[in-house]
Image (cartoon, rainbow, N blue to C red; front, side, top):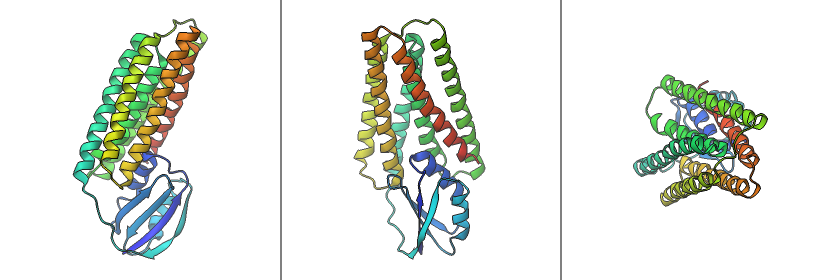
Length: 263
């Protein structure tokens, strides 16, 4: 067996990993893909030539460079059942807080909570694509990715419009108590998710990527909590709108990445 190494400069989250997996899964000569997202590295274990695989990766336009091919032994596979159970739990936590934050965000008038709920939804979509795509047909995976991406983009657009409306028109100051309490609960949910992922002690890249993804969510939770505190001290809606706009930008970026999966 041979191992070909690629450096993919724009591979910085699970979305790019899924793009590459879906692009390469039709190649029968590929036996295993080993992703190292923090170092932007992809190792392809395969038989026969690498030229067609190289062209396929390049078509994604993720800033790839081919490092070379060496002889290699097949990698040792980890047990997938435990990892899938953990990812199901993480998916459940993320989707539950999407519903909770979306509901309380509208009740409290907080765009920060609404934006954070969509960030949770974006995570849920990535985890769901990873879980539901196993063993499925390429066409079905692409349809799921396309629907998910457009739906997320639609919600993010509505969010941007609402933020702009509240910037330009008079609107009530959001209930900072809801912002702080719900964000602390979401923070706890993400900390539990991170603990579950780390508990697996897996070297598999999708588990490591999930840990990075969840760590980013914790930062977002902290941003909404800070916005709630500023709303309280300043008596102003501006901190909530600013954090909402920032997070909606992240959500839109995630939607664009998911849509690339459907190409």
